[in-house]
Image 1 (tube, rainbow, N blue to C red):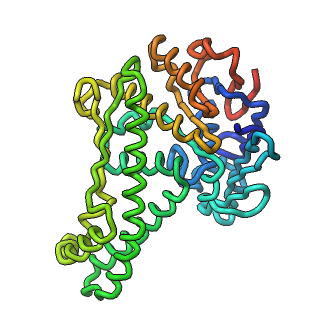
Image 2 (tube, rainbow, N blue to C red):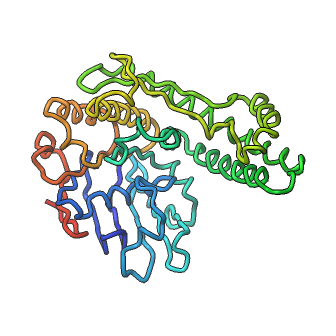
Image 3 (cartoon, helix red, strand yellow):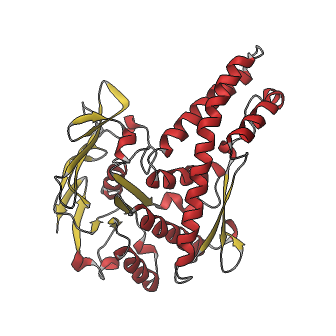
Length: 360
């Protein structure tokens, strides 16, 4: 299963871009600023979530356009008719995301039932050294690609958390009945959120352990929950902490404080203290391991932005070999074709320039 007949309308610098006759490997080649990553971002929006840039929808529509943006693609299936996936915005509601599946209105969450999307971009280079919130979002994005329901639990937990924090910071003492109701929602969705993260990390750790230690540095992963991961425990913790949380005017314990611990497996050194090259290699290993998992049962898309050019020839060859066996449709960007010479013969190649795309 693969995406084909891809269209971008008024998306960033793409006025009307069409990509057809796609392949297992798809290469977008062009100068910096030409619009290569914009194509990857468009593809990432064919899954639940905010896409690889996490941009506001109103920022995505092409400058000067009097309408919103549009992204569409046909998902080819083995023996059935292709499924048409589309997401778009309208000028009247520029921050409201609309979705259609086979022409019928749907939700972003339903996109996850058809397509799992994984990506690796230069913006993720600081994942191990940045704030814990980045790693929580990373876990949730990977978990979403394996279980579409995860996105709903994350969104509903965050909504309940915001409401509890609002009550805690109010000048008036919050009514216990209101807190009871909100905390019940936090417990329902928070435990599901933590269990989804735990399953993800456990499954991913097993997959990583099966991968060779070289040429990509193999990471060891540990999920560190910041609260009891069962309903009774989380409920009791929220109740017991009401006075403390009221003083702090925010919720101090819960899955919104979780952490992902990553260690260089061979050296037993925290990823945050590893070299830049080792961190990049660990990110690639995690991305490849997850892509293999995501490709089981649903169509899978792997988006790699400027990854191949930053690898030495040995690691680049290993990357291509792993990608061949991943089961995912792969999209990669680069400023020149030379780094992709080993797969150019089996790839669809597009030249990108100023928001225009031309097939080689």
